[in-house]
Length: 190
Image (cartoon, rainbow, N blue to C red; front, side, top):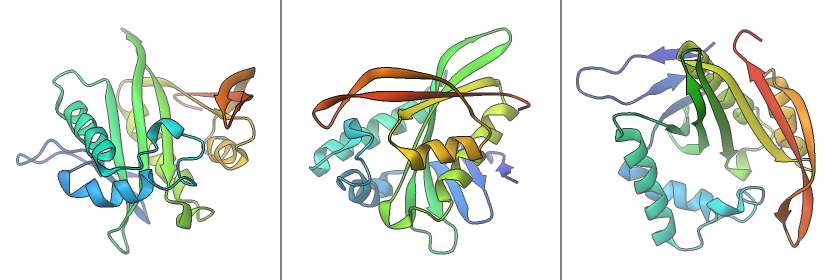
């Protein structure tokens, strides 16, 4: 179960709480822990566009994320995943609007967890919290994709109620070759 705490009069920030995690919007103080994750080739192996060897790249990414958070009409929700017990950054989860209309919005989902925290259920817990937030709002459909070989990510999506909707053959250029991409979807109420 996710506790969705409403923004206070002093802040507009989204804050979601789970038994082990807090998901919140990024702040300037996230630069160093975010850079530690985004400069780690293992953490970013399946999301190479987020890899930043230099801190200037991470800083530019962080500022872009914080600008998205302040937009009057939001199309992106990027949340830092923090361990409740330690207060340390554990990863990130993001939702972005793909399409919308009177019936609600279709969102895309992305996420990563620090590699030393893999296989602890943090990705599943963070994704479930983001889905709760999305479906409590205007979200009616969420889609996600990952390389077919990324079995860990596929398990996260399946544990969170996603169904595989397709397999795009030789769709994504990764590690010097074309690879298959698994596409997943979930509807509100599923």
